[in-house]
Length: 399
Image 1: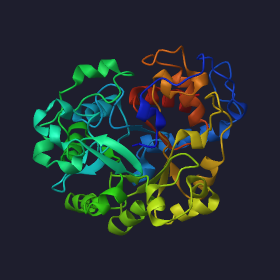
Image 2 (image 1 turned 30 degrees about the vertical axis):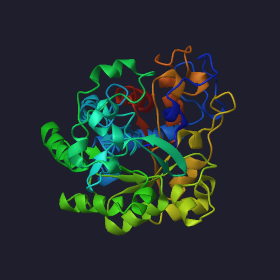
Image 3 (image 1 turned 180 degrees about the vertical axis):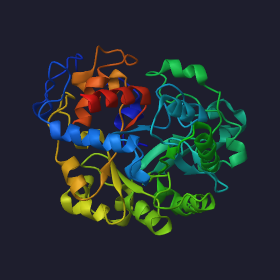
């Protein structure tokens, strides 16, 4: 997930904040750590969590709430989108693993990378045989220089190894550079079956279609490729343990006509426009999509949304959390679940009033931040650190 996340593009510490937690209007924290003023929301979340733990419901409705989603695996501890990161997320207890930001190879295979540009997530730059593959391309209106999956065959990509994407924030992860290869999504589907058998419970995955309009223009339509794989492996039904997501609403609409899987529309900043809207001349922004009318439209073809956390609780100019918006209420009224992104333990990625010092590799008050977000009634959260989110959830539902 996420070229839309500015902190991911930079990997640098953000300014502001001493780590002192502010008391937030509707989510004021009591001395015992309980969220005050939102007891009904907390009780509802606890009831839904208990239903998920007891196996109540089917499909997405049978998952614990708030659902903990391992963002690209346990990417706070291992290089992202590797089987090492995916398996660690399961070992930690994640309810779902985001196994697959899906991008195609030149010969049409779907592989799991954060972006089609792989210079920052693989050791491709150290391969002299691929030096002439370096290109500058326009990706969703932005010029990007590097190596792109669509210029490699799968066999060529398999000679590369994954590396940590943000070493300035996660130098400990560089220990694992070069250990794992790039997985294909078909390998992920087989891995899902193996892990389900091994662990004795259903493993869920949450793949994302990356830049589908860009790839369709290259003749590498990704929706049809994904649908074929899901059908091949019998995972294309309403209750299949695979949720499909994309930042492009028309891509999710296309998927809704191809498979029965639960689907989610990802939503970036309120002022941004999905790239398919730009290409198709649709003037609407994300702000239009999160109105009651926009959410009702999304609910006609999807079951959920994945908003940036700032759409749930905005930050002020200093980076501090302010008051929750009405997005959770409005989305639930439209029948949509909300799985916002992305929680991380490190200071630069936390709201300023939950940071502790300025060390870009140090952890802030992530438990306080998660408690505040959970109190809004969100149905789950994407996190690079599933173990932390699981502890925060246990604190929250038992408070």
